[in-house]
Image (cartoon, rainbow, N blue to C red; front, side):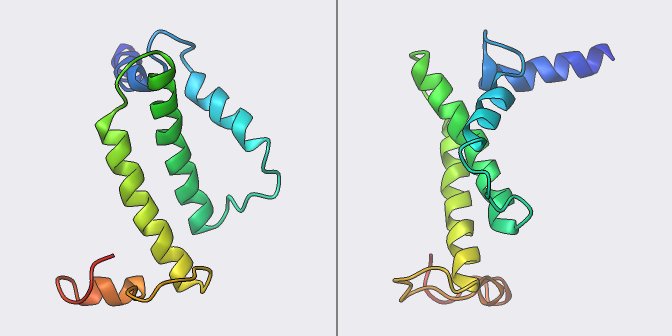
Length: 115
């Protein structure tokens, strides 16, 4: 059990350093109360929850006068690209002149336009 406490403490440092141990969960839950019809059980809903986790970490760091985590910034950049692909595949994205379906990008990796 001590090893799990240590792991939690190390992982939690970036999301609640010095604050409430479950601060990131409390903050994101509070944000989600604003979206009662949010599609959490869909791929885009799950993906946006991942984005929110990293967004919260960046906001928490900036609020405390710290430099934001580059890892979180990079993760958000990747997730936004994936979100565009999901929305494109679902015909929910406009202005997509250079985009192709995700399955096409995976099957032909290394060729064609980049997202």
